[in-house]
Image (cartoon, rainbow, N blue to C red):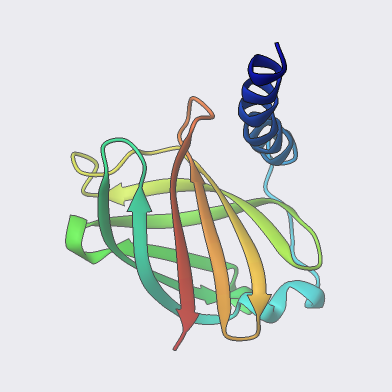
Length: 143
């Protein structure tokens, strides 16, 4: 009996963490304006994305200009990209809805992106599919 309970607990803890993380990112699709506190994301960020299912990886290039409200995303190795539209933010986290403008055959349109600040030169990119399932993660470095 103790072994089963321990196994159930080991399965429930990661599932609970994912549910809490995602419940914090399930938002309306209303675009929000940034305050100066969110300007830490300005600049160009690059890294490698790691997709969960099917297992794959691809290059990521994010270019942000908060003053012009431009959040441009490129996936060069997938030959697709588009723009991100902010829907929520905090002091070290920003949530976007992704709009794929080109290469729609290779990339899924309408996903939710959660960007979390690690420090001034690194961020974590968490991608959720339109059906709210976790899809990919990346660590991006500022160029």
